[in-house]
Image (cartoon, rainbow, N blue to C red; front, side, top):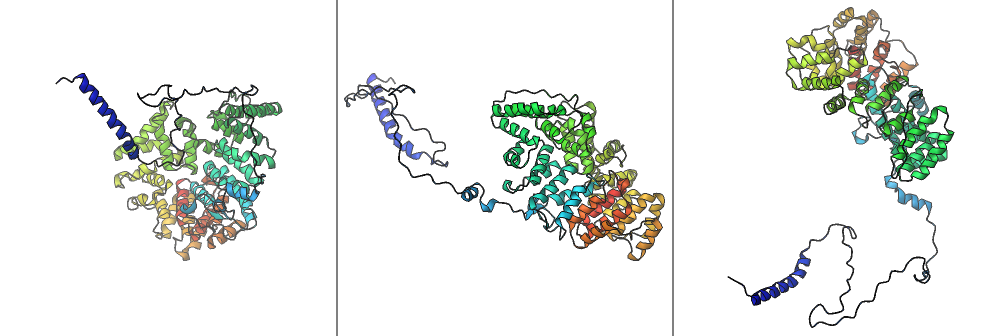
Length: 598
């Protein structure tokens, strides 16, 4: 049907009327905003001047709007003269009130107990007991880390990061600094950084400023230095803080002031310090509006320092592998945990870190898995990653074939131990049957590196008495079953050193007949009755239940790079003291590790 022009006019007028009626209703149905006032609101509409004539025929005639004249700045008479408004005199803000506003009392952290583990820690707050604070500090400062035992390192790290009471005779911030400094030397850089950052800034001491810089450099975190720079420069004239100030200014969008500090530092830098300034300048150039470019040349640099490593890690600048040869192994552990470096670059150091306990078995497996997606990984690295996947997904025979290849390096070497850490969970998937008994010793050793004692115990009825696997299970058994003295003597007849360690571990765990311990000690030439200041201290701490002190003293008794330097007597006292202090789990793993790595 055709619509006439008259009908079209009528329909249009009706539609306009409906729209006009509907607008208020639609406005009423708009849902209420959940945002605070001022957030997400559209800016207020600016009234638009109407034309001189009425928009609606027959409507009122509006006067033409006045022209808008925007006055120009600097033209006399263009802007009105502002008139000051009377107001009350400014009252100075009370410093205490300002401090309360910045950090209220309920948010402040006490120096009486410091730690980062919180409720997740299994260490009591009095893990150091009544030990004298300065004495504990001297032990921590003198400790030559890393130590021989992977499990001692793991347990000591857990103790150092636990929420612990500050011992008597020391400042809480200073004691936190000593704990963090030991963690840095152990290679536990992320834990050290978290510990220094658990202290409120207004409680920092000169010692804590110094250790905080070391911890943040070890993690390649220059941004973490920025809140510390200004207060630290009031108590320290160290050149590192001045360069850190330049980096922080550059990162905060002040490149001109940062460049002035860098240029001054370059003029004052000694002959070998040019690399320090260049690394700082590279970070300055990465800030907002940064226009500086620095080329890092390692030629002529004689050594790697914490500053050089930290600044290089912060800017993802590769450090020549030869530079790591002149530093302690802990720097390799820092490198292993630095995510800014590619997996293929970190793999070797990651394995060393896993052997020491800095990386867990799962973390090392994850690092290997990343190689499959790393385009820069070498063919050998990609092949290792593929083999590891087979170890987790193949049949038992295929798994064992791959595992034997991973275990080719000797278990006494860091690489050999790392490969056993890597394959711990794959080893736990192998069925404990007689057909696999030839690999039982390696399978059990691998599982126990990750604390998988229950999967390892499935082999108890398979391994022959007198084998290394049998000895490790006798020590790792959580049921605490006794072992016959004759079996220990027979085992010692095959390997005197391992026999001494087995005896020391079993005696410390209380798994030998008490009336035969002294006689067997004489037969195996293990002088467990000998006394000195160290044995007295660790035994006393164990009886008192001071697990933190026991672990510090345990690490002191293992200040050697491998298990060949650990005496059976030291192992006996370490295991016995840990057991007395309620840490039998760590005691069992340490004793079993002695057999696996000797």
